[in-house]
Length: 189
Image (cartoon, rainbow, N blue to C red; front, top):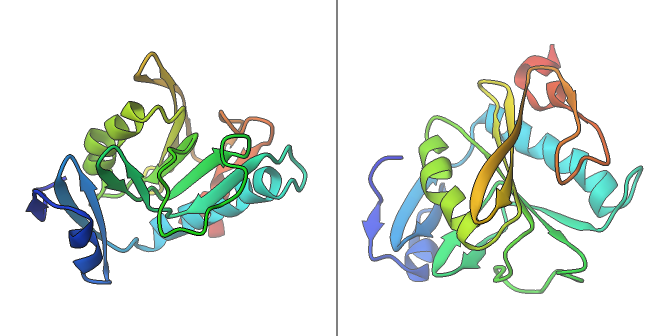
């Protein structure tokens, strides 16, 4: 996780961060991380497409969601940017024309890497729990794993860990099957 880039940070620090870095404020601390490497980008992009079709657009699935890539969330004083986030349409009927969201999503997905894994687990997951995000996924493209969490009584409970080339149904998107191999660079071979 490393040390924060700045303590006592605010939105002005996020806006002032260099363009090549992703900036987030968690517990008043500014964290900056490099843009994702290829394994990270492939996993997030593929997952966004795989979920967006059936859940956002209703193609071959139930619809009823907004699935967004890298939305900026302003939640309880924190500024978070998950790799993917989803809102049920009954809670967010339309996407606001605004630079960030103040309504916590129903689901978040963090694609962990060597530079972000500790931050995602130790700082961001507790913030999402505090804001009552109901589901969280941690995707590790290097280990080729998907960890599926649900929030129960304010705590994350690991529901399942899937790996490799498994075909899985994972909450809250268990109405459709995901092919994990498509997320990994090894799946291109």
